[in-house]
Length: 312
Length: 275
Image: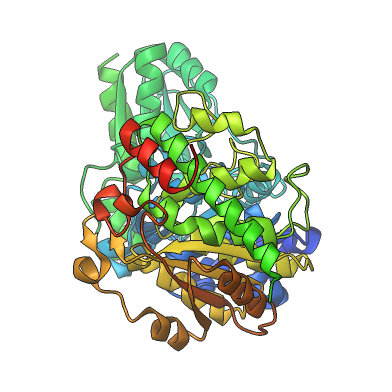
């Protein structure tokens, strides 16, 4: 059993380190600093931490102004409020002017758990991906989150980073690198490819191991950068394995599955199965119960792989 | 108190800027006339008296910054920026045209002197708050100015930003509210009454001043008063007339988003003593 780390905890740690290294790094939150983990930064650097209160629209606008004034703001709240409540502020005050603000949205997806469907963002990647100038990242685990947060800080422009509430298995190694727009092949395979993001990458690695026992060689490609997408890596998988299963803790509409299908359709059409929420909202429950209910387990990925192989 | 001759010179500048606004809107054949004319005296006071800025060095770090939160008054801002020398006055003829750096609403990445992108109402004040915090964090003495519309303050985000500006004690922030009483659909009071405005900002712990928004001496004195205020942001409620300076545009919501026709331009310029 691999180590388990919540990506939001890795964010809190990385943000604190960035704050120690660069006095221009500032953090904003909307009354959720204990949950998003910006509180770690706030405790160490109270003069560079700004709690907007429960006012996400103004938080994003203030972050834009701070960036215009030369700071590197990280603004955090839950994904459902960041991409939902503050959408138009992100569009007008961040994406349109290409403002150097990092929106780090925690509690993405259904593994929010008990809080229920109102708090489980299943559409944020689709919404953010549609915005010109926006970079959208969805790391797989703790180490990759730290690297992604650092890459975002080094990049001059708006970035949306989607993180989760629950602890997830560690896939990458501490100190791994992360490049915006680049994916990673985590397991080689020749019969089909899982293209995954966020916590579904760990699930896909498990599924690939199960498939290997059935003599099916499954490749696992992790895309921590949803936009820009690693088009070459996706097309290579299509050419070399001839069948794709996408998997994300998100609606199958417009997120990773949508992005991969766009690339495959135009570049190298092969059968694709999309694993994700089938155009439904979530509900209360334990993270594991919800992953099982909505078809986001290794067993479901094995079934999807078998389905897509039959379509080759 | 400003010297009488200083005030006269600023009034003359404002008159000239009204001419530029009307001409550019007529040429563009679209854009916002009424709210540009109501705001231009306040903008004249800011750009040609109050603010420290350097048109030859638009990114000068210690400059005062201005955020036009009511971004549809872009013609008024562009007229000031051209007059100050950020770009050629000839460029004003390209307002809203394909390929022009003068977009329908202010764009920081296209127009020299524009600090942030505005146009979607309610968002500029939050950005001004962020700029004011950044200015303090960087240890700069630069002041941040913003101009709001009175219809704009119906947006909830304005009150989020109002709350934050007082909470963070942003005494380097001074906001002018262009209180012309009209919005696209009619009188602000009838569309959605957000008044009384003064008491509202007072209750949010702002320093509040009310002036005649077309009295340049009064505006400049209010700006100076704001300079001297400590621990609180300042709201200058400028009572204005939509379409001010052109009698047949004054007090008319119907000229919110309508440019002057050729005939109206000729008559308007006569009123402004410009042939």
